[in-house]
Structure formats: structure tokens, C-alpha cells
Length: 528
Image (cartoon, rainbow, N blue to C red; front, top):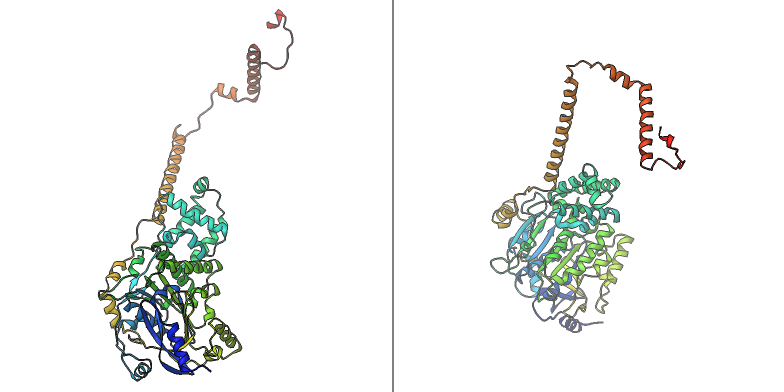
């Protein structure tokens, strides 16, 4: 049976790192904290991504808060996707109570309440900085994957983007894209097919329906200008701490497609914008996605593949991503395998399915001589978790039952008045407040169609005028035919005329030696 000394040595050996680190909590053996067995968080490996999982009420959000505070203190900017609306309190100092005093006494150190620099953000009309992106920034590949299009439809979307680039038709919002779809299906079809090839109207109809489905989830508020600059996510406050950006997406629970659309676009934009960084002493940015199952809930296979690819690659840009969810199985295996830090709070075993989930979760953690992992997963207290992570060499640290430190910021939400004060003092809110409606594909094509309609109407009016003029040319009465006209109109006369013409024609051809195949010898009298 392992003793405290063996456990202490294992924890200290596994959780002592070169470079900057932050205390996450203290190790526990037989459900009792072991003094000095500090579980630390190495900032150098925070770009290796992570998972915070556990049943409702076990302390996941507070763990997220603790890690975000540690990163901010280390001058690392943070983005929190706040689905439940309970993370705004990080902008206000916490209040010490008896439970916090008791926990600090066990873990060691002192409790220092602190408010952190916070920027509130929104995808809709919530208070805060409005985040938008243009259709052009998505590009044809990403847009096609979000709309779950087949190869033929993807090719058509790529052609639309090419046509718009060639003809200087900016695609800023969804109404631009819809207008172009309608144009190439009707008035502009001949023009497009001449330059770019045949277009199947069934494909344009399918794409249009899928765009409208995205609109119904509220995507119109997200697409447009001014487009958000990712550099504004990576700011350092005046006191040197990393800015914590709280993206309030409480209205996204019923709009999973829009949420996954936004997240993937943001990751793609970060990947495209940031230079290669390699292994830094600390990351440039760390994102926390609360209720992460919403990202994957309605994601298509193509979208899932894209998410997995971006997550694999973006760590080289110095960006870490943490998923916070109730069940670790909510995160696809391909993504789960990329997560270096795992903080597993308690799971509940109410049903056979729950027990199966617990068994699977236990198998995802390193083997340990200190715990029976499957049993312990159902016995963890609030604010306790099983922790393992990667060290600087990429080797997993020992699995430790950890009593986590308490957040130093408020463990509750800001009041409406506090939210208003925060928003009113923000420079970024003013920068992105007003939506811009620049001239784009929608307006340009409308003008083009109006001009074409005007020309058509003018041509029609001119034709009508000519017709009326002809009618009125003889004073309105039908002109009587002359005798010679009547003779020429007679069918017998017409036949005589044709015969005479044929004779003349044949004579001319004969004179030219082209009068047919006959080579009959002519006598001198044959000309008379």
C-alpha cells in the first residue's frame, strides 16, 4: 500500500517544471490532502490544449476560472466562451468565506482577492464588443464545409467566389452571397456559363436552402463589417496582465450550428494570421470553450475533420484550446487525443450507460498505483479532480487526486450596473459598435439588374413607337395596290417570272462553262 512519503515524492517529481508555473492545487491520498504535494501548471505546455470534464455542480467552471486567472497573471491573454453566462464575475474581486479559508489552510499560501482585466464580447445584441466576419474571410472551402455541401456544390461555391473576385463583387454578408446565387441561376446564368462552365440549378437551389437554414439560426448578425481583428484578442492590460475576453454566448445553446461556425472561423483566422511560433515559454492566447458539446453537437463529418485539423496545427502558432464539458465522451476521439491537460471532476453513475462512460473515462488516464480510478471518479468531492498533463518533454505526469485552489475573483455574475460600467469604459466596444453597410455584391448586382431592365424597357418603347409610326404613315387608311402590283402578285405571273429567271441563269452559267455536266457539241446554229 503506497504511503504519504512515496506519494509526495511522485507528485513533487512529476509536477516540478522548468520555467513559469502556477499552483493548481494539492494532491490527495486516501481522500486526505498531503501537505507539500503541490500540483502545478506549467505555462510552457499550455498550448498543448486541455479538457475540463465532470458532472453538473462538481466545480468545472471554477477550475476554468482558476486557470484563466493564472494565465492572466502571467501576461497571457485569454478568451472565455461563456455559454451559461456565469463567468463575468472574473472582472470583480472575490470575497473570502469560511470554505475558502479552510481550503487555503489545507493547500497552503494566502488568499488574495483580485479583479481581473476583462473585455465583454458578443456575437449578437448582448452587451459588449460585437464580433463579426465577412463571407469572403470564410472562403469557399470553410463555407462549404459549414453548409455540408457535396463535391459538385463545393465546386460551384468556389466558382462563385472566383466570379466575385474577377468582377469586383465584395461578399460581405449573407445577403450578398444569396444575391449572387440568385443572379447566376437567372439573369446572369448565360454570362457565367460562358466564362466558367455549366451551372446546375438544382445545386444552386440546394446551396440557397442551406444558407437560409444558417440564417434561421441568427447568422446574419455575425456576417458583415466591420470585421473583428484577432489582434484585439491578444491585448495586455495597463498593469501587465493578460486581458480576459469573455464572449457572452448565452443565446447560442439553441443555435449550435452558428456557434460551431463562429468557433471554426475564429480558429482558422488565428491560424492564418499568426506566424509559426514553435514551443514558447508561454502561449500567445488560450481559449476556453464552456459546454463544448455544443461545438460538436450538429457538426458534419467534414466540419469535424476541419476542427480536428485546425486543433492539431494551431498549437504551433502558440494558441491553446481547452474544452469544458460534462462528459469526456462529448469530445470526439480525434480531438480528445490532442489534449495534453486533463482535469476530471466527479462523474455520476445513475444508469448502466453512466457506468460504461465512467469505465471509458478511467481508461483514458495513465495507470496509477495510488488509486482505483474507476471507483474514485464517482467519489470526488466538489472542487476536487483527477489531474494529469504533459511535462516539457511531452510525457504525461502522474495521475493525481487534487484539491483545487479557489478562484480569487468573484464566483458569481456581475450586476447590470457593473456590466454597463465595464462596457462604457471599453475602447473596443466603440470601435466595433456600428455595423457598416459598404457597397457590395448585393448593391452592385441590383444596380446591374436595374440598368438592364431600364435598357430593355427603353428598347421595347422604341419598338412600339416605330410600329405606331408605320401605322400612322398612310393617314391611317390601307393603301390601294396599283395595277402593276396586282399583276406581279398574281401566281401565274410569279411562275412566268421564275421560269424566265431560270433560263437567264442557265444561259449565264453556260456562257461561263458552268452550266452542268452536259458536253453536247453545239452547231453554229445552236446559238439561234
